[in-house]
Length: 370
Image (cartoon, rainbow, N blue to C red; front, side, top):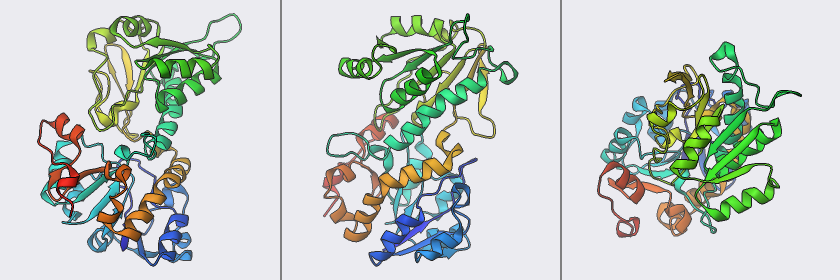
C-alpha cells in the first residue's frame, strides 16, 4: 500500500501523522511511505530521518494526496484540502465530524473512507486513539488556564496554588473522563482547590480513591454545576459523548454567575463545546470574552506541544496503520474496534452519532461491506 503523510495546515498545527519509527515498520512490511517535505519539522523530525528509514519525500501536498491509497494525518482536512481527496482513498485522522457538516459533505461527495481516531474502540470499549491527546489536552488545560488567569492576559489575577495566608484558587472540571482526570492531576499538583462534576457514580468513586478525597467529586446536575461555577476561578469543559456533538451544559445565563474575569477552557470544543458561548479559536487568536469571562477554546490544543503529542499519538495509531496496510481495508475492518472508527464509506455516513448530530441518515458499515 502507498501511504501518504502530508504536512498539517491547520493554524499552528505542528504535529505530524507519522514518525520515522512508524514509517520504518510500514516499509519493512513492503509498503511505500511518502512524506511531504517539512511535515515533521514542527515536531522536531527532519526529512533526513524519514529518508533514513526508507520513506520517500514529496515536494507538495498535491503529490502526497494524489498518489496515496491511505492518507495519515492528525487533524481533520480544512476546506483547502477537500479537492485533494478522491474516491476510495482511506483518510486516517481525527475527524470530529459532528459539528462539521461541510467536511462531512466533502467526504461523502468524494466517497472517501473516513476513519476517525476518536471513535475507534478497543476490547474494553475505551477510546485508545483519543486517550493520548485527551491526556495532553487535560494537562494543558490547567496550564493555559493558569496563564490566562494572570491579570496582564485578561484574568482576575488569581494564582491557583495560593500562598501561605491566601487561599488557593478554585478549579472546576466538568467531566471526570480522561481529560478531566488529567486536568485534576495538574490542578491538584499545583495546590488548587479542585472539584470534578461527573454523572457516573463508579467514576466518581474511582476519582475519590485515586486522589484520596483531596479532590471533591460532585454529581453533575444543574444545581451542583451552577453552585460550583459561582466559585470557580478556572472552569474546564471536559465532556465527551463519543461521536456526538458535546451537550451544552453551561448556558449563557449560568456563565453570568461566574466571578468577573474568571477563565473557561473548553476542551470539548472539537465536538462543538459544552458551553453555549463556546466557539472554536486558534493558537493565533486563542481567547475571547463573553460577559466578563475569558474563553480559551482552541480546537487543537495538543498542537502547541507537538513533540510530546506526535510521539504519544503514534504510539497508539501504529498498530492500526499496520493492520490497514497489511490486510487491506475490508479485512482490517473485521476488527470491530477499528470498524467503529469508520465514519464515512462509499458516500454514506456509517457513524450513527455523527448522523444523529447532523440530522442525517446513516448506513451501518456491515451493510456496505462485501
